[in-house]
Structures are given as structure tokens and as C-alpha cells.
Length: 246
Image (cartoon, rainbow, N blue to C red; front, side):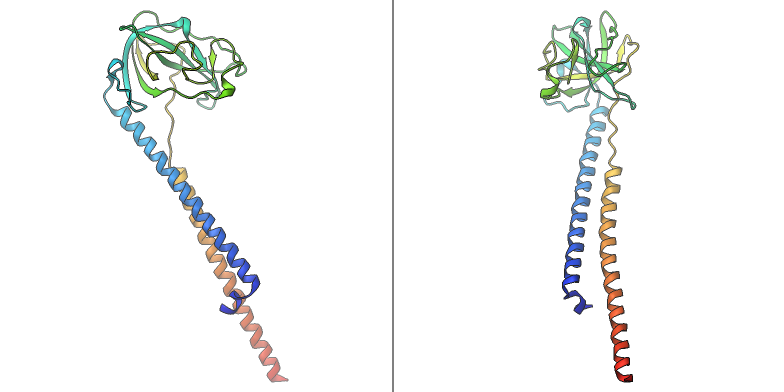
């Protein structure tokens, strides 16, 4: 087998197999790190959501996303907008954003819920009015998004491309917004914005698959090397027997 490994053909084949094994190993390592990142995100979401609700007026500027927050105020339905391209349950749709004017005079944007798109993504849907009067809400805290250049212009009235202060009609007095989880009195029509499903099992499966491919490449290399070495040995013996017979 050592003699075969010195041939140009087997040097090239071995090099190819080694490159493939290294590539498979790097891909496996990348999927493993992606799984770790998703696991951290899932744990952070679960930890923040499990904490007791805190009042919005006492919220720290460094509060993590998904912290459950309570707030009391009245909705400013004249300023509400929809956020485009927000799929949910396999359908495209919009988030409904409405400012909540707090009892202390400040305001915060609230993602009250989700509605499906009934026409094109650039046609504003009818926005259901929020409950009137004083409202007590619970919601998860989130920092503002960053809108891309394509989403800043060309949209109809009462539609924005992201939950970003740059494109919202009113800035608000906080560094983020709330995603509503409950309110008293309750609102109708809208579906609550679904929390993301963070699943790291698929990345772990991919990491294992890439390692399996690396193992198959190594086993295949050894199998073909051993078979060719065996064939060469048989051929040499037949040649020797033929020479002795003659």
C-alpha cells in the first residue's frame, strides 16, 4: 500500500480526500457553533420571560429583550401604523403598532398584534381600533429594529418597513417597544405576535452529518486503497507464476 501512496494518482486522490475531510470538519464546527448560539438565545428568552413583570416606568435602559413589562395608559389610535412583511403561521401579514400614552405623560409603542395580508404587501390593510379608555397591558420588551434603505420610502400612509424610530410617525419616549401578551380590557380581532421558535436540534443534526461524511470519506479512501493493493498483489503473483511456468 505504501508503494501505491507514492504514485501520482494516489497522491492526488489522497489530497482530495484530505481537503474534503477538513471541509466537512469545518462545516460541522460551524453548525455546532450555530447550535450553541441558538441555545443561548433560547435560554435568554426563557430566562427573561420567566422573570416577574416590572413596571415600564422602572425599566432599566439595559433591560434584556423578552423581559415581561406592565404598563397603564390609553391608546393613541390616530397614530397607529402597520409593519409590513411579518409572516406568521405560514402566512404573510402585518404587525399593528399603536402608541400607548402612559399616565405620566410619556408614550411607548406597542405591537398590539398581527393581521394577515389580504392584498399586496404594499397595500395598507384596515387597522382594527384598540380598546378605548385606560388600559392595563402586559408585554415583552424589545429594542428598536433598524430599517433598511429600501423600506424607508415608497410605502403608503400608515405603513412602515420596521419598528424603527426613523420611520415611525412618533418617536416615543423609550428605547424600544412592547409586544402585547395580554390586556385589560381585552382587545378583539388581532392575533398576538408569536414568539420565535428557537430550535437548535437541526443544527446539531447537521453537525453530526458532516462528521459522518468525513468518516465515510476516510473509510472509502482506505477501502479503495486496500482493494487496489490487493489487486496489485494478485496481479504480481500471477505474473510471477506465469514467468516461472515458462
